Length: 163
Image (cartoon, rainbow, N blue to C red; front, side, top):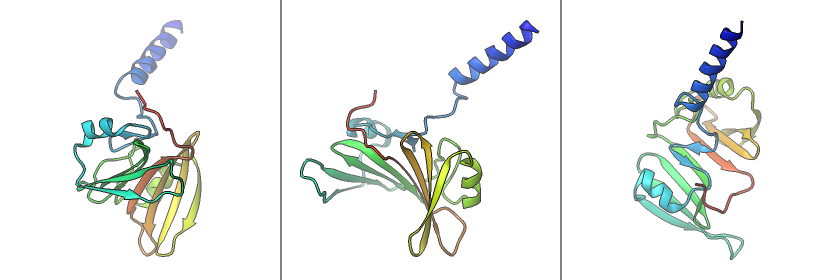
C-alpha cells in the first residue's frame, strides 16, 4: 500500500514539475500579464502597428501593439495590462480554447470558474474569473456560436516587471 502511494505521489510530482503542468492562467499567446515591452518583443518581435490611447489620468500612458498574427497587447505604463487574440491567431488559452471554438466549449473548459454574460449589441461577451483577479473574456457574434476574440486581463493591473 505504501509503495502504491509513493508511486502515485512520484507520478503527481513529475506531472506538476514537468511540461505537463497547466500554464499559468495569466498567460495568453506566450505573453504574461505584467511583462515589460522588452519581454514581449523577445517573444513576438516588433509590432506591425503601435497606437497610443487617451487616458483620464496624466500619470497613465497606454499604448497598443498590434501583430498581423491576430494578437494585440495593451500596455499601461510600459507593462502588459491586456492581451487580446483574434483570427488568424491559432494559439490556445492554457486550457485549450481556440478562436473559432464554440461558446459551449468555453463553458465546458471554464465550468469551474465563475462567469457572467454581457450583451454588447451585435456581440455577446462571457467573462470568466480564473484566479484571484485574472479575467478571461470571449466575444461571440450574436448570430453565431463561434468565438471571435479572447481577452485576458487583471482587475487590478500590475505595474512592475514580472521575472
